[in-house]
Image 1 (tube, one colour):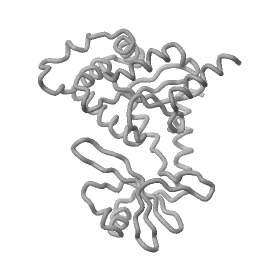
Image 2 (cartoon, rainbow, N blue to C red):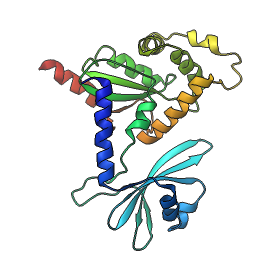
Image 3 (spheres, rainbow, N blue to C red):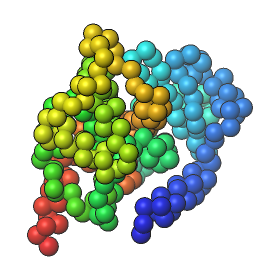
Length: 253
């Protein structure tokens, strides 16, 4: 199945699932829900979606601050209007969560590579030493996958924006992957030619700035807590051990 068809099928499946659980994105309805509990009226919290269930709403919230945004799932009891923030589980022990928006996550991808039958998403910070170690450990070992790379810049990594700008200057996936590997595997410092004043925050080009805004949304949608972070085609977290062990077992068959 080619990438375009796979994306289309995934989108249709997601739309079907969301429609089945009464997804609410209408702003008028969301504003009505916000009035039911004072916590929801805090200006820091932004209600971006809700799922209506017989006795409650599952709420998709964004907590916005100067240090960035964080996704929060909350549960509003219809009868009491009491708000619960944290994890919830159905009677079978399955976690009740707000489904991720596949389109938002895919729009945050900087480049993709590989023609494997399984799809994964890797969120990485170009200045993160653990990310560099991870890339070296998986180099040449992900042939079973279609790998989608999301370039995330942690606030305390001051060189990362210039590194990302340099990678994103590649005209296509092939060039961006090559630059990424030169940086992460070989320690290239060519990105430094883009830094005009090391004492000032790096300023992205207009095009990359727009791309990074999409990254922020994708990272929040995935609820990333650190880098490197790996997710499967259903956007479920995958550990490095699981990824490498899966590949190792696949090679023995």
